[in-house]
Image 1 (cartoon, rainbow, N blue to C red):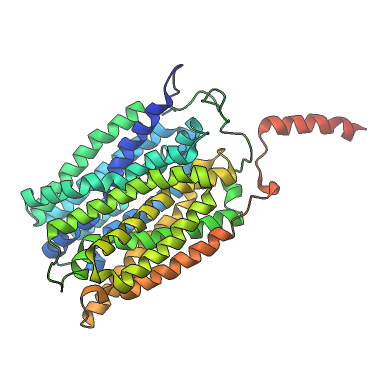
Image 2 (cartoon, rainbow, N blue to C red):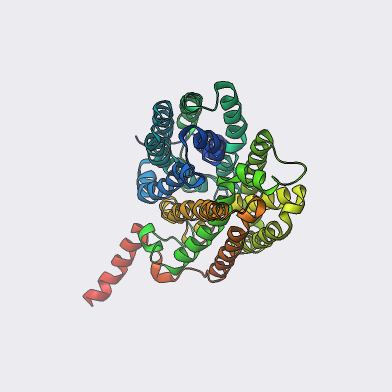
Length: 445
């Protein structure tokens, strides 16, 4: 499928809605915690086991983005969005079959493996195109689209909770909810497939900066630079710290205040998940746009440094005040979302727009790693603490201090980022040919 080129007069502001239709759909992944309690009760799963589909989905997101990034650059955003649509929707349909037959491995295969491929290809599908349409404001442009991924759960969380309430939280009700998700998202993602376009040239904005000016580094060269691996550590640490809370958000707030006079109800916990999604979404557009003003390194100093402070407040006094707990969690999730939305622009600053989509795809293997580490740390420690007879906020104290340490590691990695050395710069074919012509007379002499 060849990339659809925008006709003359095409507005670049039609591209972000196309990206949003895909990202709002695949952002459902952040509402997985709503499905955890019914799956645990219907299939007899532990918290660690019920996190497995989500963990595998994030692993496959990173792997498919890494291996598919070059294909996305070559075939264009429409091809990528179509692949994402087929895989993501099919994953729900396979999961529906697994829930209906009470075969948990089918849910892991469908949501985790097949759906995870859709997550990865869908996530990177618009990034390179948006940067080429908005070379003057890359942080804002990618923030608009990636905002959808963070905000997907804002829609999916109450929607899923309502379906489970209407259909029932047993295996058949969960299966029907999965089925409705798969069909509805297929229709919504089709809008993005039909609407997306690529710019005719490298300078879509009259008088604006070209997408191919300045430093340009190929994907194969980028992965050999220390800057790439510093950013890999930054992203991995920031995501691990945020995703651990997000994946277990609903049960976590219930546990924190279970022993108080005002315990948190199931519906209130689902509302908390929706609030976190709103913060995640707002952070993606707000903080990434701010990065256009204050710089990428400075904004990551905020994400990692202030994020560690928020974790410390939750760990030390979070169970004494619901407003404080919710506020700190909202700030953390806004930084978590902002980190995702800012990283493509950070990559563009360091490596140029030449193959930024493919570079971004490779960097998302950090997300795969974090998708395992974050939920594993929080769930495994909580399960062990519960086995030891502990309850309430004490289930999470150790996990929270581990997250503070991870954010400190990310802070140091961000400080180590420097401009890319000239030996890694890509030389366009036109320059290569000109250099050869200039060198030939000298060689002949």
